[in-house]
Image: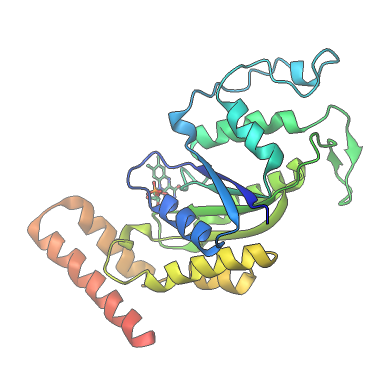
Length: 253
Ligand SMILES: Cc1cc2nc3c(=O)[nH]c(=O)nc-3n(C[C@H](O)[C@H](O)[C@H](O)COP(=O)(O)O)c2cc1C
């Protein structure tokens, strides 16, 4: 059986990256019948699109004038069955290095403007590739609403690029990710999401379960604030709030 190709973008510049952990769990849940090609945009030489329009010209349609590492991503994209776009929330959007890759996907679009099935204007797509696409993200504020713009944007670009939107995996309050066992249930659910993706798409129920808060926003704010101040009392405060959340989680499991 030929393996399905997964194009995975790991967009965090931090090491270790919590968002990459989420990406890897999703991949794990997708099982054995996949071949994963993972890219780290910030480690690659990828110039920004300079709007030269040569990919829209008659001479070399669909060919980028920039000869850099984006070509590696594009080559995988053309064969990909799945496209997992994993990136932390940076100022309510994608990190610049990831946005840069998204802009370079301009090459997927043909110059004509036509009416889309939703009644808006769109460009026809090149290469006939329509991978199933999933957004994976984490953020440092406690409320899942912080992903609102990113989720909207991801859906919009999925429509525009011809990607088959197939789900979202988002986790807020990533500042408590290291508290022992607190996110264990989320990790199992992310693997479940990966399995669901292979079967079709990630269900809303699983997305919502993964995104459920593990503590009150009030407690999280106190904890996050204390954890950055560095004093002994604040350290104790951080640990005791995390312990409270762990005990709550144990009670509910
Ligand atoms: C430059 C920068 C911008 C950020 N912007 C936001 C933001 O707008 N909202 C938010 O909730 N967290 C924000 N964060 C926090 C990260 O999204 C959060 O720590 C994330 O879980 C980091 O994931 P990683 O470990 O994969 O890098 C920001 C962090 C950085 C460094």
